[in-house]
Length: 134
Image 1 (tube, one colour):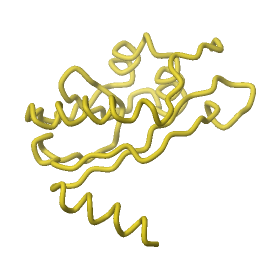
Image 2 (cartoon, helix red, strand yellow):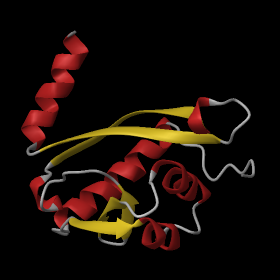
Image 3 (cartoon, rainbow, N blue to C red):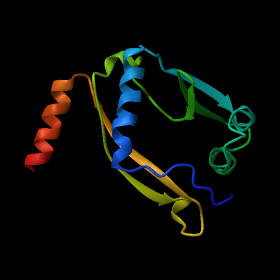
Image 4 (tube, one colour):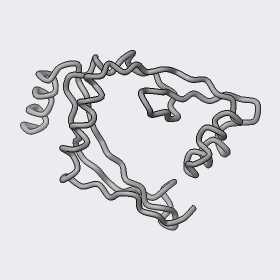
């Protein structure tokens, strides 16, 4: 793997991420569970060296792996997921952090973005208020 930094996120990016996520939520996109063979998964994710490494190292030959499709996004995941994005009414990016791939300082540094969602804006607001008081 090469040491390429694609994008470093910071708090200044949160509003943009939230705006895109909220738009997706209004689009009523469904989550589709996909069951893939190891070879199918390797082909599907061949452009992503991180996914290829996970699939190659963790999925035994002849076994399957699950992925979920939502809109244009397909990602490895064991699930389950909610049926549709329309069930999300409250969404907020909470923080971000950097992490080395597989926890090794000699590997690429990746960005993690932590966000939460709720079925209503009121529940999100109550959660944030509770956190602020704690």
